[in-house]
Image (cartoon, rainbow, N blue to C red; front, side, top):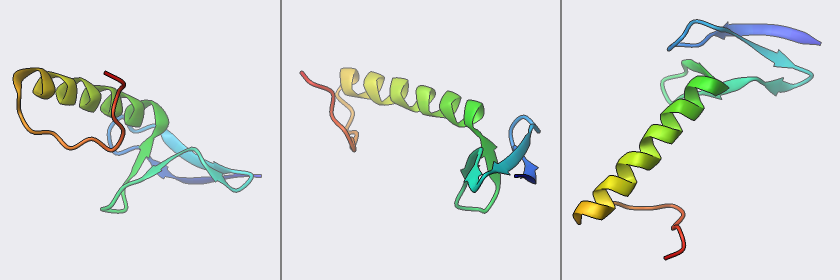
Length: 67
């Protein structure tokens, strides 16, 4: 079963619930993001945390990379 839920707030792609699984992410403001847009944002966040660590800025990590 496939049910249309809404559109991605970033790219406008349709987001569906398929067999009980949402093919996207619901954000705090209740807007929707498709997985490709969410992955792009996650990839960008990881880079900025890594750059901050290299410059000595304080960054909190939920998971630390092995040294």
